[in-house]
Image (cartoon, rainbow, N blue to C red; front, side):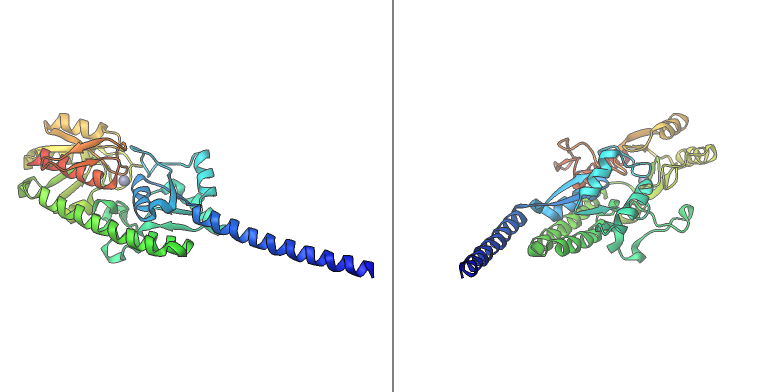
Length: 319
Ligand code: ZN
């Protein structure tokens, strides 16, 4: 009898204990989930900026590449591997931009880590497939803000799936980001109208500006081809020098993430000025504020600042 009572008491105690443990776990889980942020890894500065705009204060975004870093040549460092492995979700540009990160991203994706190329939500018919890069799309889509706006959808949907309780917030910030990108595009169109038609030629180090050219009505010539992996050939340089002289081009441009050597040589040989440095595959230093002629000021460490800094540099040199 005593045995039975103590057994009963034991079961009761265990039940109470289990219930409170479950409750406690529930409270702990709920609290930590609400307060906890999602850990996101992003590759380029542009992808990190887009993801931050959509995620707001729900996420801690770690960008692998800093200002001035060339994503075509970038290899993951040991700390990068840690960042990628401990992230809840990974966003990258895709379209073969991050050529040397592809293997690790595939490996992580296979281990059920959510990995997204933000460019996957761009309709295929809007992508360019330049002849010199046969079989591949041009990855430099961020230079047309309308095209970059398509990438927001991938991020909104991914975050809403991972964190459904806050899906509305992601959708709202996504819509606001899209509106902002459309505004940047309109600002660019207005700002560039002062450039005469025959000066609407953009000569730079590598072919990063095809989408820019299509969006803002410029002829674009890259000395080095689509990726920075190949060097400019002498024959190409001679052709560009002839073109500059024949068309009386006022300025050519160096890029922040590519060696300026080829452009400097062309400038010397043709007598054409260097119109400034454009941001190509990375944004600028965060907190560095620049101002356009119309009084607009912007932080070159943001996507908006990158777009506006490039447009004002181009307009100032070519008009
Ligand atoms: Zn590039």
